[in-house]
Length: 156
Image 1: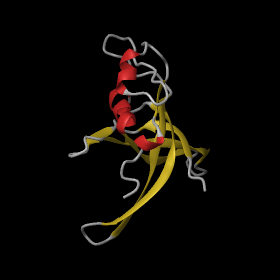
Image 2: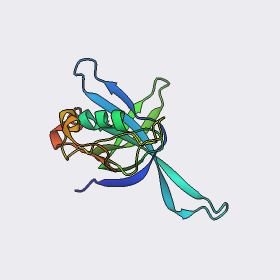
Image 3: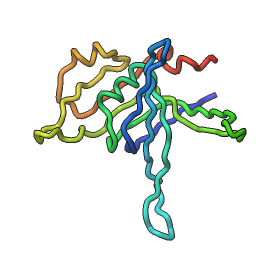
């Protein structure tokens, strides 16, 4: 069986990062807008799909540090469908991509001094320590984590 999703789109808001109370594990929630390939025949405007993303641990930290609203990103991951019962008793369903690989495809917004912010390139499987030791001024930012660093609650 195969469950792989590859998307390129723009963040519609800054990543929201939370840390587990007991575990301290970082989780980032993001939403990207992905343009459809065809235009709306009535308005001749391009439409977009809005897709929720969830990144864990190092990827979440990477998103917190280097990504913000408007950044163009490439995402690879798996589709996850969750369902639950809301407080009002209705059944809710959510589809989201659990991120395996996250790359920024454009430069960060310019800093107040008119120069682009320095963002290190992160090697595959990189850690926060790797980010501190890598050179500055690269065009793309990349973060990939190993299988065991993905969703810590996947087996629950």
